[in-house]
Image 1 (tube, rainbow, N blue to C red):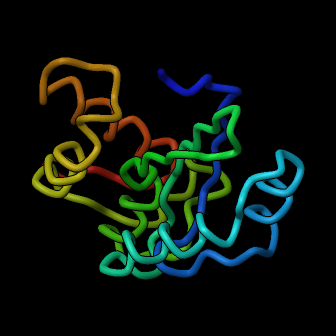
Image 2 (cartoon, rainbow, N blue to C red; image 1 turned 180 degrees about the vertical axis):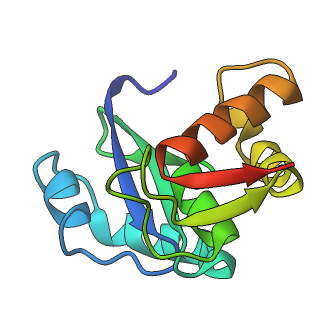
Image 3 (cartoon, one colour; image 1 turned 180 degrees about the horizontal axis):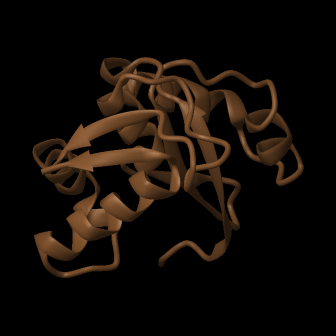
Length: 141
């Protein structure tokens, strides 16, 4: 017999660095779930991506068990890394803070393709380019 899904919640955590401190502790504690078990599993699965911010979707069941799915890093995080900058522009239409090439956009689109709501690589690159422009990053090429 299949377990009954009670709900799901989303978290954004640094790979390999999850702890029971917020947001993990409160999210698991209020649902009566074993948070330390999640922390151990998450850190083991993401050890190779140490420090990268990763979205996680946690599904929990009536028997207090859970499963989780790790998504690809957010596009802005990948763009900041590709441009070699620490943050985007406060006034992206006036102040440009970095540059990326179309080849870098294609690499980011390949990483994000499974999580984007588009069917072609061209549309994925276009979406990532739009994110770059909104962050004050210019696209060369």
